[in-house]
Length: 165
Image (cartoon, rainbow, N blue to C red; front, top):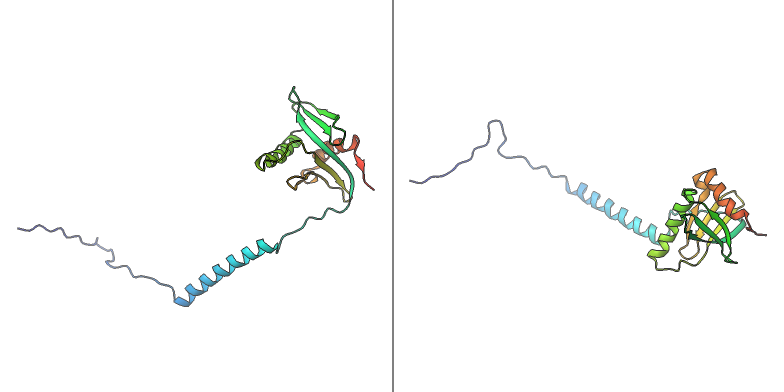
């Protein structure tokens, strides 16, 4: 006596599902479009095609600044040229400035770059204000974050900011 197990399709179920295959020209076209898209993306990134350049115009004031943590939790701002304390920012204030500086400093740490080099704070003739790290070439457009943030950074620039010709 042999025992065999036989499975039957459930009632109403199709025993063989029809296979749907797209026509070969459609598949070829899809592969060609994907390949062309990938090729154009690589070429654009390599040659800067489609990259927008942010033109700032002429700087009207610029100051090199170094920043350090104060023992009380504030921020000590040093003039980049004289290395004298230019300003002390109290603890719990200037949150945006702290965040911007942490971002710039973190980029330096990841690149194993010196933390002693000053940052450049610049006011431009079109009204924008930026802080830039000359070592990493990273620039933050402070003016993009509103007038309150600009006011805090301009206060650093106005103390003894060098007015450019």
